[in-house]
Amino acid sequence: MVHLLSNLLIGLALAPSALGATLLVSHFSGPVYTLSLTTSGTTGKLSITSQASGCGTTPAWLEYYNDTKTAYCFDESWTGSGVITQYNVGSDGRLTQSGQTRTSGNTVHGKVYGGSDGKGFIATAQYSPSTITTYKLPLGQGQVQLEKFTMSQRGPNSRQDVPHPHETQLDPTGKFMLVPDLGADLIRIFKIDASTGRLTACPAGQASPGDGPRHAQWWKSADGVLRLYTLNELGNSVSSWNVVYPTDSNGCLALSRAQTLSTYAPGKKGGPTTKAAEIRVAGNFLYASNRADQTFGSNQDSVAIYTIDSQTGAIAWKEAANSYSYYPRTFDINKDGTLVAFGGQTSSNVAIVSRDPATGKLGNLVANLQVGNKGRAGEEDGLSAVVWVE
Image (cartoon, one colour):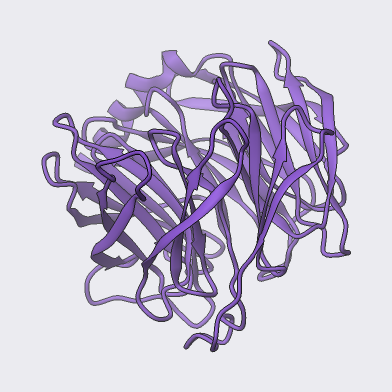
């Protein structure tokens, strides 16, 4: 009864701020959808309001920038050729293609950086070519830099045959680019030349053997303590990193690993096919999604929740919650911190779940919608990314 009452209060507290919310969703089959969320009391309704094409054959990731009302879509095409596509996002969420450039394919992530306004270039990660590539913005002006990674020996996990960069993540100052490398167990660090867009390699942060870092998120305390958290796909874990900035403009940001905790409760672990997927920070809480654990029943995977110490940034296990999706490859928390949008890759659904910003707890399912065709477990199909437009 207490749990049900808590969930009801969460829903009642957040419903007014959710009216008229918009989301963007990409699907591995090609389309990028605009979704509208409306709520009434503790329940809501999702509907597809428009659909766009132009992001190649295998859209894998979306980045949205609210200040410019711009979205970038990254094509993971495995055919040796792909695209990055830029869209203007209308007031109703409708997408209008405004730029595009060809790539070598297999791009899994990208981030805008540099220039006089922080939006002069875009850096992308290519999983199997073991590369990161940068381009000048607006798209169509050509490639700035290509960095290919190698390693002297295979890692302990069978998937660690070569370096596999999985994300390009900007630091809070905009002066450094971080690249979690699933294959090499590294957090690669690059110093940014804002005027040219060039990236210069710094000493990398070393993850534990077999961790397979995939994505990263930043957190900063009220007193200015900065932490980096990484999601380790192969290790089914999250890591906390100490961050040290250089004392002069020519130096490098440095990382040292402080903690690594499982994405499962103490005494439990994932199965042979489980894979951690995505990580998010909201307030003093950290969230990490698990794929294929079906902790909450058939085709309902879990999301791990951790508390973050408000002074030190140390993390501690809190609980597991239902993502109401199968293979939650992607999820995003709205700015109010009251709703979480989970994107189930294999179930190809968007599940909106209530959240209490004060306690970090996730509550009831507010709305749910299948978007496109369902995928196959472990395959590159189904839903690929979901972001709030705000």
